[in-house]
Image (cartoon, rainbow, N blue to C red; front, side, top):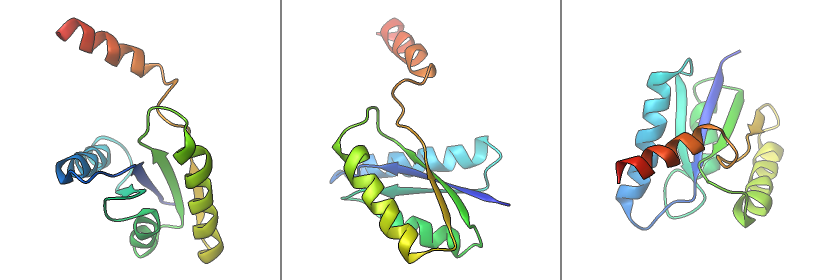
Length: 120
């Protein structure tokens, strides 16, 4: 079974910020074993999560992992994302949607902070 990945970000009025998320999704597709990677946005960017799900489903992908591109668990991840995923799951009962935790707590974040601190 082929798995699709959705990098889910907040979205911004500043289009270059949204483009940066799309670039991360493209780099993820090139770096890993996942050929089907899309960016999606909660607001202020396109596509939204359902739009990305529909894009992947159109390629025959039925299992999708939603990776929140958020540092910490907050209202958007505790309330908004589960509500959106539930709505999509009810509309697309043939799809499996899995949501990962946010980036906070991942051991690589400490290394990133160290790299930033050393680079300043």
